[in-house]
Each structure stands twice: as C-alpha cells, then as structure tokens.
Image (cartoon, rainbow, N blue to C red):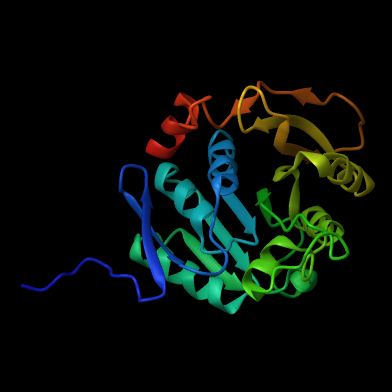
Length: 249
C-alpha cells in the first residue's frame, strides 16, 4: 500500500493549520513563517477584496490561509528568493489552490515590467523590518534577506504599493511597533493615508510588539482609528482564545 500523502524532504518540516486542512512545507533551517503572517492573513480576510497582491510571499503561507477561507479571491504572491519561491509553488500546488493563487519570482524594484499600474485592490506585506546598518546581519542568507532591507527597503515597498494599488484600494502592512512612525511617514510621503492601526501585544503586561496598518490612497490627512488590541499569549504562555480561533480557521 503506497502513501499518497505529501512527504517532506530530509531538510524540511510539514506543518499544518486550520485543524490540518492546510499543510505547508518549510525548511528546518532558513526562514520560517511566524505569527506575523497568521495575523496579517486574518486581518486581510476581514476585507472584501477579490484581487490581492502579497509582496514578499515567502513560502506562500499568507495566500494559503486567505485562499482557504475566501473562495472568490485571486491572489498573486511575489518572492525574490529562489528557495522560498520553489517552496511557495509547491505549497500552493499541494493544497490545490493553483487555480486562484499565482506565485511569481521577481524583484519588486522592477515591478513595472510585470504589472500594469493600479492592478490590485488590496496589497499586503510582511516586509523586512531591520535596516541594513542596524543590528546583526543573520549569517543565513535566506533569513537575512527576509529580515533585513537588503533587497527591499521600506521606501521600495511603499513606492510599489503606490504604483499597483487601485484608487480605492487598501494596503495592509504588519510591521514592528518601534518602526511604526517610519511606516506612517513613508506612506504619507507617497500620498497613501493610514486609516486604521491595530497594536499587537505578546501579553497584557507587555509593550506593543507589532502594528498592523491599513492605508488607502488619499489626499486627505488625518482620521487614523486605533482598533482594539490583539494579545497573543495568556500569562501562562498559552495562546489567547482570539489567537486559537484564528489558528483553528
């Protein structure tokens, strides 16, 4: 009797979420997705958008989560690294979403050669968040590119969003709270106005860890709304009910 279930290679893990309904291959070493991706996907799922771009899609985890719960959307994921691009293609195929999710390998700094202007009504990103001259550069290239602004700076990201977002579209970015001002300033510099922000806390006793910022193209300033906080862990280090619900799908 043969085993038709997908099997990870010797240097991979096979993980799952949504009660095992979605499976994902990742490298044991190298970049692995974190709770950031899960929170980004959950936030985007609350929006009514059918034509979505994921910038820096990694192994494709965010498109996978969204495609599983939104049966009508079409998603394009862009990834610059060969290894992560190959994993994303494999993950999308193994989960049977290749009819609605497309993964392309490309440098967003040359995005005009691939997409027409104003091609997407929602653009999401979990971008590199460490400046090249800040902090220790990870010796593993895959992690370094994913975490440090080596191939995509914050300004590169926002310029891409400005070019590709429809006039009424939404941009959703998850970013470290300590760089929230940098993100807001860069968005405004490109005439993309932040409208909503949610702060992510590790626990009720911790400082804000991450922010999710939703922005739209606008010439009008002001009106930023702060959403209720998202808390990841209880005091005993177990996930809160909110996070358990997200992971369960």
